[in-house]
Figure 1 (spheres, one colour):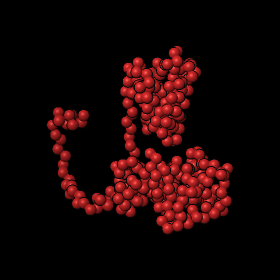
Figure 2 (cartoon, rainbow, N blue to C red):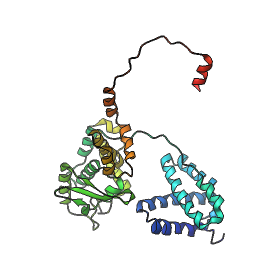
Figure 3 (cartoon, helix red, strand yellow):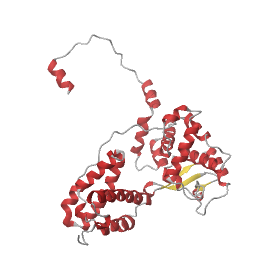
Figure 4 (spheres, one colour):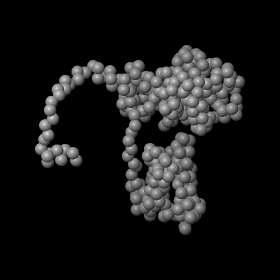
Length: 332
């Protein structure tokens, strides 16, 4: 193995120079790419019986990558969407490698030719108003953690912030008084301001009077004053979902996530007649077309549209079979 073809220094330069310095990728993107290559290197070590630090670029070929993606999907039950995200990270690395190692152009092209998988796009799932009310009533507000969880869920469902945006909120991001709002820097490093409803503002003002935990000023910290982890957020949401099932049985069949609370806010705006461009700005979408998924999800709006139309008057008639050959072709 020559030093020029060693995978380790090339991968290090990809993270430090390409992602961090040149592209100035967000910490979320860097963590996502890091997790992808950590999983892939462990897989390559098992397949090639060689430690990751001693691998060379020639060994990372298209068949090995395809086998890695297949294992993620079949053995680890990863969704097709997540599998495609892993492939995106690998493609990004090999596009960088194409400039660094032009002598490996054929191998790199074969890797870049690995296609993303197509998948069925399911309808957006969201909560009804009774389900939201049951969730918000579930925390025990006589305890510190209960008051935090209530404020967390209320803020999430009213602002529609992403999970990373919610856990990254600082006390200084809240602007109180006239025109109260919360300021975040979200996906794509876009800064946006989301107005706060009076009910949310009242709860947050009470929460700010709680003794601050930790020195980082995290708005919704864990018990040690640090930023809530992804697993910590899911734990508290699962706990309150189980408690809310007693008064709202429909929650027993649903998974509560911050993203589903985000969808709920978007559906509320859409059903209230808010323009799609405003919803896109509210949620921090890159394109207005992204909000199309909410139009497809709401059955109530489709029923209202149906009520404004004149349905065709069907007439019951005896079925007459057509030509056998045409029937055969139509069945294909």
